[in-house]
Length: 53
Image 1: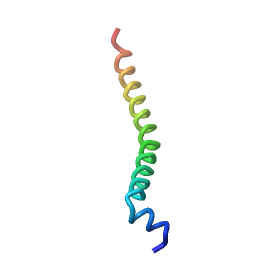
Image 2: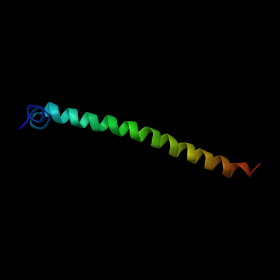
Image 3: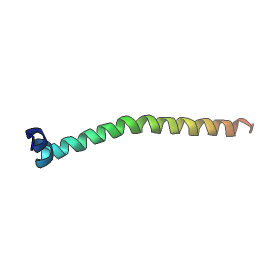
Image 4: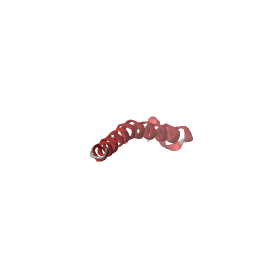
């Protein structure tokens, strides 16, 4: 097996590296999606409250 794969897959530090990379990737995707959903919810709430005095 290639030495890089041995480092990544056979040692705990490699698994931590893979896990950390997945977490960072998830944050970069998740935060913008969360912000968009909150903006849509606020816009819907504003439209709903627009008709009431």
